[in-house]
Length: 180
Image (cartoon, rainbow, N blue to C red; front, side, top):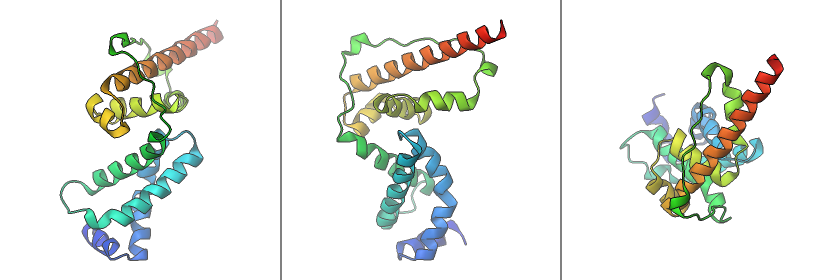
């Protein structure tokens, strides 16, 4: 069945079509949820809530643009909505923001290590880092999505980078010590 037919059936609340859509996209959307969640459990909850919203709002999809992109926006917004109420974002003067530089050998940093240290960032820093670095949003867009100022977005990104830099440097020191 084509994606277009599947979407039409989902718009008619066809349970089998919804199951098929979930099977097709749940893996990709779960990966996205992991980026914006504190834990595996929370990512599962965000995935379920995201798909509930997708099925509720699928009638609003007008076949303009990528369907997958439309779904991604819903899943990201679903995850972020849970944190908007918590006021997790610290406000900092924009003049205090400085970008850390990180020097490393690519081969010494396995992907699972990088994912682990990003996952360990405090929620407010991880969300801004993911939106800016991994998803390519501007600070203006992030500020709007998270209902914070652009300066707060910039400072949270800077703090996230500092934490990541420190963790990478500690890892390199530990791996150097092990080889001695």
